Image (tube, rainbow, N blue to C red):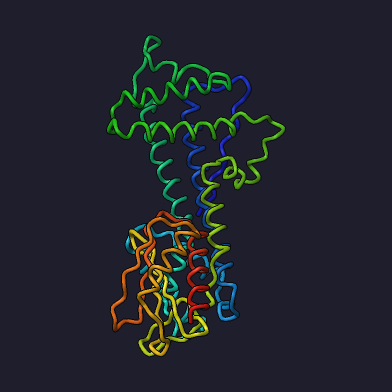
Length: 349
């Protein structure tokens, strides 16, 4: 990827409107690349963190991490397939055991990098909206005279004091073009306002403080809307480890995500509408299964405070209990729920 040079700051005496349109386009492209590069770098760091639990994963090369990071950013139904394929290729070259459940491993990696995909979507939406607004203010497409309403967009000199008013006029010009459905106009306006606020901080720096040409990453930190995703990515990463991946598969060819000393195993499943803990209890452990659902519901409603916990009564010939969480949840809450479940079955059996 060729690095895009940052645009120049605007002189104190301002810049003519049609030139400023061009500088905003340059800033958008530069900012978008800076965000993409920073997001990718953070994802690579996250992957290195969660794979750092075992010497087995020490064979992963820098190039492997880069390709895996690209796979984790896949949007849509093909994401798990791409991540699984990439992990299999890494495993083959690194000599990982055949017993690894690559699909489950891919599912965990996909979940951990969720915030990175959200950031990618957020950046893409901003770029789409801003490009549309700027596209309706292209001087080459409009014939203007001094009497035209659009004259100030192109021919007036804009400085820091008039920048906000000028960007509002640019958006009004876009609104009047009717190029998007009216129900989406507010979204475009919000993206435009956030973008121009970031651009203003960049363009009207003092000459003395202008050091961004030497460090394009600083553009990212001026874009505060993305920092929340990176903070959440860091938080999710810190709660994840893949030690379970080294447990050998059972007779059915699968291995549990969690195994307790008493033989109880727990599989973690993320469904489109809920998250599930699937508990498998060995047949030799005697228990009154009908007591367990109510006991677990009480535990999880108390801590971490879920309101929508669904646990069906297990069949008399079953040793499996599925605990469904239908609340909106954070990774930290799922970690607390997992702890409560494991402690219950550790004490019960």
